[in-house]
Image 1 (tube, rainbow, N blue to C red):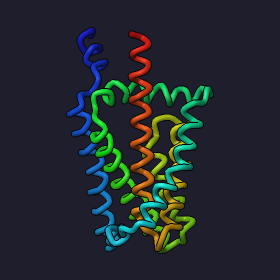
Image 2: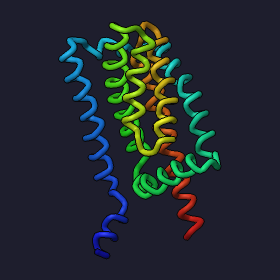
Image 3: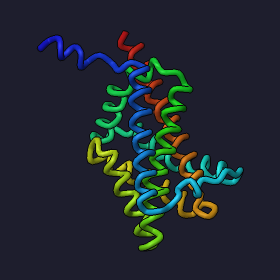
Image 4: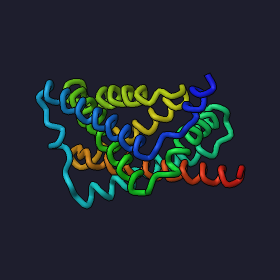
Length: 205
């Protein structure tokens, strides 16, 4: 019993973390492609490179980061639980990761999740039922895909709404805009979680 408990407490290695993240996010991308094939749509048509899209994606990160800062510094119990969960579960692994590791994981999450929830689900539902229903459908699935705690679902829904609106109101529904916003947000959040864990570890030590 003691050995199994010790094994559970061992942080995930950098290699294991990168393999797991790549496999999971790659699986979401494959799922998006399978669904899009069944619906006979090409989600890649919605990814168009332009300076305006890059700028809109970076600006779109700002309200998401504001939500992150407010919730991460809050002393409300549900938000403190989320902060502690992220620090305790991700921190030991993130401290061994390089910045380009985190950029890779953030890009994979941003690309695969936006491809699935916005490019395929929101887009296909909106084409039949209108943009409001499409936004709701994509965002509900996005929120419940992040069902760590009830409060985490609410926060994911807020962030997903911003990402959905960025897609809906971007230049001709350019998926690149929410992909950049999602990637930038995840990267900054992971860097903050890593920094806080390292700081706490040094204080304890």
